[in-house]
Length: 188
Image (cartoon, rainbow, N blue to C red; front, side):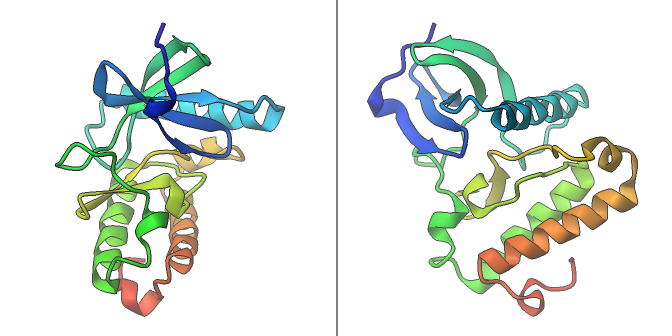
């Protein structure tokens, strides 16, 4: 059992709170604080998607991967890779840096992440600036939102539909971070 302390808390999403694992700085544990059916379904789909990525032995740095389940002092939790800066601090979310980053930097980060998602065939259900860590201002890493609740299986089998879905998700992400299509370039 992992004893979670207030000091190890660093973020909160819509369904889970995130804590650094005390004895392993490369991992975090996400503990659910909601128990509605939709929340459980979303978490189950995300874990299913992570297991598929792990089964492919995908070594991409574009996704912070699921590493198993664990009991904590706050209830059951899921272990994930923890995205850190070179100095050891937890990497900030894109949502907290979107106004600090230059247009060129945002464009480069989003373009590279988009290409990694297409190449890795990642299905991202919740592509939101809060779900993307900006590691050392060099790359985006998806820390939450992998998988799609509705029709997720179809995007796994159709490269064309996967590309369409990701194109739509990335266009929406660009609007949220104040990046126009002209600023983004030709990759979308």
